[in-house]
Image (cartoon, rainbow, N blue to C red; front, side):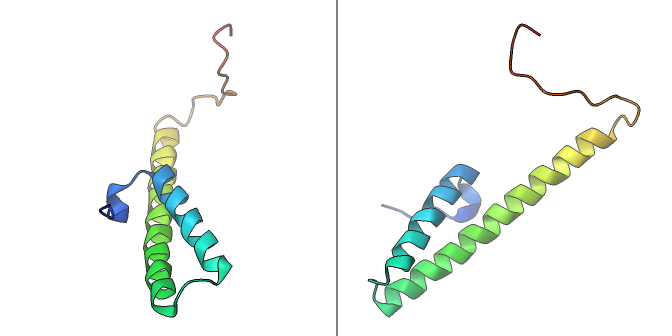
Length: 81
């Protein structure tokens, strides 16, 4: 299986792989070389995840700042509102 670059992965896939890496590292059963490679991959995934979240936060701030006079209302998924 080819390993995707973190920047080409969805945020959810990034988190899933990062969780798997943390689990593998926590067991302590990996050879040092393998553990280091997984750790490096985990760092790359964590950095990409942080970038994705920062980008999303910036987009939200931009959207909210476009109309300062608009009242904020509670979001509801219910179609009956």
